[in-house]
Length: 611
Image (tube, rainbow, N blue to C red):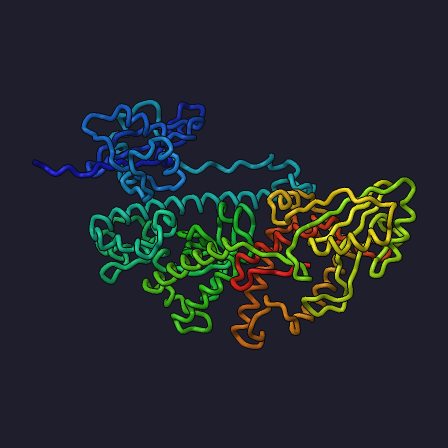
């Protein structure tokens, strides 16, 4: 009795290698193909119009499962090349059929066979005409002689038309090269499966989950990983190189010259490009990248392969998880230790397969460490060492007692009353110095907000609130009557959302100058500070300088990613040079957003003093 082998269906949605024209427009947007393995039978092939692309792959699959073609079997496993598509398929078919994420070179073979058949029978096809697919032609924004949309007053052809044409050409070139790269990866994968089998599949050992990291795992498996002393692309060119076109040979040569490295983002043009620097070799590349440039920020780090081709560079294989500067710096430190190089590493060393495998494993180790640190709850305290809890005490005021209460508050020691031009209802309670760090200034311990009918005391801990309430009740006496106390956790999602939703207002020049002076004083105190977050080794030592540098780049990155909350917390300065910081909740919440993000990347403290 014969052995029954598992049946697998693999499929996906691809750009058709032809267009169907009826003389007025092009109506074919995609081609959905499902193949059966190992038989090679095409179980479904459907042309999809431009209005039916969404969910087309799953729709065609379900139709084929309901009415499978003659000679096919119900699949034991379904394979697709994209994780999001796998989730869509799994939701449609349930858990009765396994769904795997892996390249689908069989579809490429099917399309090649379709093109060969079309070439042989082109003369007998008749209408509708079938023509090779081409990129969309350039569409100018306005007429050549119309005023340029930029508002310069010049004609479009003398202003932005050449730039728009160059951008369109570059976009078309990138799309063509990415399509070529995808086709070659599928071809090489198919070749590797047939020639090397399980020996080649050992490249999966370099990844914790090769399916999750398929956008790096697939190109690494054919361009970087070695089997019997050579890469898959080298073995393919030896046996089948003469069958490649000139474009394919040029592209494969460019891929062989590329290397896997840790690339830091040093500039971003959203939706267009990235400027990257290799932290190991020091090489810099300007990369055309649409999707990545919309999500990455300056100082993010990528584990990626950058391919130089013609006059440009492309990202062709990147780990799906970028790392923040501190974690990336640790990966680079360990990589340099393995190579025993303190300075720029020659790219020839970076092309070594053993080093690439090491770099992938260290990158995924850093991901795990980052996830573990992020899961540790952060304990926040003020400069008195009290747990941070935004506390507000509400009092009622007897009629016509406001002037008396304001005089009594202003007479208390350490109270800064409102000055000319400032909000007359706000009194600030100060205390000289700080209990956690040396500072020539004063610590703000609370605020009092006075209206005709209410008094509100705001602090950031229970202990400070109790002490402030006692002082105010003793000073004001019967004209005030305690009503209620409320607490707000600055880490709560609602507070963070309110801070992020605050409309960012540009700070006045006086506020920028105040911040500059504050930072200068803070950095001057850093060398003698007892703060646990300062590097354990002096910056004069190399390891200390590296730690300070990685921390500085992370703070720069965090400032950018939490800019809306920080702008909401910046002080505004009145003409009399009095400083108003806004509400305690807004100020502390914006600071918590920044510090909580920093905690995820800094491995030492579980307690941070804020204010």
